[in-house]
Length: 90
Image 1 (tube, rainbow, N blue to C red):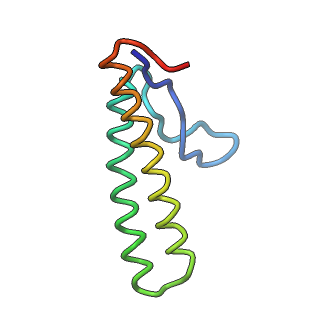
Image 2 (tube, rainbow, N blue to C red):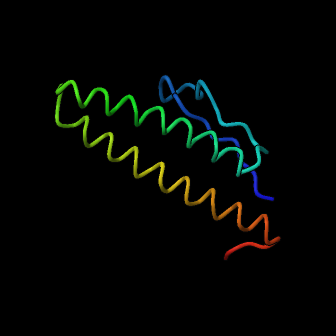
């Protein structure tokens, strides 16, 4: 079973460590489910901003978030198939 690796984010300044990190050893399938939920929320917020006509960039942001979620969901589905079949795609 594949799992996550430690991955820092939200660096305050170059000389400082990251403020947060993705924890290691989380099963990939569970991590992908969580990121899909985060992307769904971000997509909804971006669409709401875009409908307020604040700027053209909001629609682009909504589209990019939707595309990212589709990729994550596709990978999650493939991981699920691998788990069910007991193998992996290489």
